[in-house]
Length: 160
Length: 128
Image (cartoon, rainbow over all chains, first blue to last red; front, top):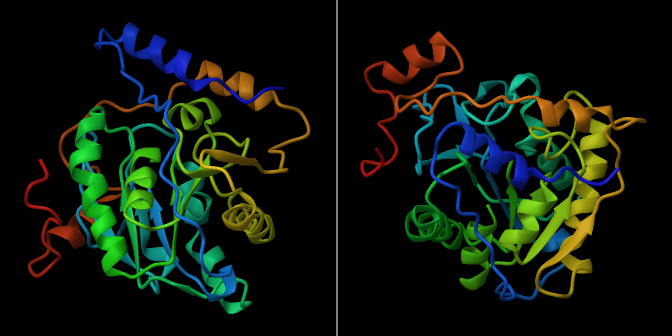
């Protein structure tokens, strides 16, 4: 069976709610490209995830175009991770955050020597921000600044 | 997520986007992507299956060296289940919550911890 086509069903859902038509970001031009310079085993990787991940003690996300992010230390205890998100069934993510925030998996790959290192900071935020402009002009530049400051060689982005 | 990847890549950082929504990923067109045909909310695996999670991530991370063309998508060779009934069920369901504009804590103890004196301040003063 083919992968699910999500765009038509989300369009129909918003229409049924009486929302203005959702304007999908469609980039026909090729994306920017930065060659990979080091092998994985010598690379430092930054993790970003839009499944609404935060650490207990932090302020949770709200559901109305929340363009903030949470800094999550790479040595956090996975049991302290929480989720707040309006658009997916969080049952499994709350049982095992690695299904949307693969921190234990990445730590294991570092331990095995497959991956060089993890950035000391991972970032949790919300997907489903209605305004693409807000992502482009606000959230994306702020996260990019953080990745540059963290001096990562690679970034892994995990949506839901 | 693709927008953030494009931004970071333009700033000099090679990126890889995981995906479980192939049509959305192809539309946004990030520099590199790895597609896992699992239900939403399982972008990097199934709960409490660390061996599967590891295999998925290993295969995905290989895309950093395997993908040579901007916009390339690696199709990861994992199946959620023998049959694909989940695709029909998912198409019928809708998990969306109302767009509430106050923090939505996972549980009350989180709210209490975040509101204690000395707790981390709201992370971004500009954020509404």
